[in-house]
Image 1 (tube, rainbow, N blue to C red):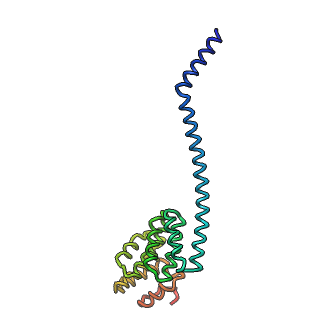
Image 2 (image 1 turned 135 degrees about the horizontal axis):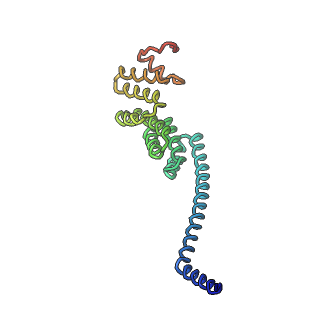
Image 3 (image 1 turned 120 degrees about the vertical axis):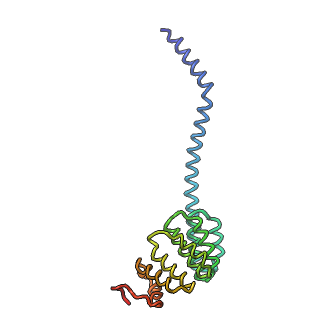
Length: 214
């Protein structure tokens, strides 16, 4: 066997192969490495962004807690800059809570709607809709309050949902249906740590269940 001839043929074959495919392999390797380093950069950037977001959120939440309505502008700006991430939604919920305390209900409604648009969590979604229904009811917006409440579907929120439904009936001068709704809230465990529901039941003359304190 002519080993030299075979080796020369292999070298020529390798040269032709490299001429046809070598550049593609290099390009593929570069793209692959670029993707790897790009992914690592993305991960690092995400970590740094979340850390910065956490610091900013801590600052805004502290300002709301300490300054109340004087920090509203700062909080609104933070929410606008962080829409679509958890910090923006949490800040919107905190701002809405403080706005309710300050009786700035349109601002509370706006922030709750922003938080609702950004969350994918079912439990948080139901919580926000309950709060939104109450805020809308406080502004005498019965139709929208009912629409928000209708979307509270989780069984875990049945007591709260029934109580707000009772409040809606009372706002429409319908004490009979309100009493039924408050009973449903009571039967779903709504009296636990909720003296306001007991007061509503008492005001409508709704009897307590056997074994409950009067």
